[in-house]
Length: 202
Ligand SMILES: [Zn+2]
Image (cartoon, rainbow, N blue to C red; front, side, top):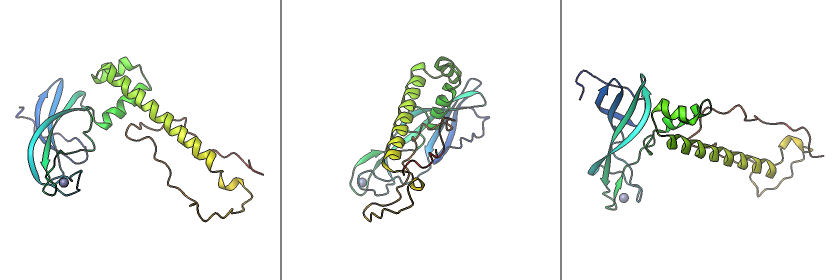
């Protein structure tokens, strides 16, 4: 309960700072809430404003001024007026035990230093960092596999004799499959942008 602290700005989407609970030299603990006043019921889609109760959830976030930050999310359990179901509200930035941006930072740092160092530096568990690195590696592998498959299925358009093999059933353009979600740190330099392979089909 630090009375001398006025506010802290987190720059998290859909998040309101309720209060700074602990403002100590070595740590910062901040109570937050969702800024969505009427979350949507996952079952029937109705907007709900009736709060059944609240539960605290702790989520680690990026450091502020070198101090590790723990967010205490006052997570509401809502009662749906449409279907009567009770449900815990969701939040895009506070899903796991770490915020997505902290997870990204840990993975990015693990590219530069050992898992041990990253864990010590951010004061999180070694297993937490390792699990993120493995998950990220899986996502990148999956993303590359899909890209390879797409490349094999669709010959590059400019490589053929420019004869539009008109097949009215197949749509010409598909939306590009999404890049690995959530855990995408700054894109690695290994990604080859638009590899041009000359005229492969004759
Ligand atoms: Zn409902």
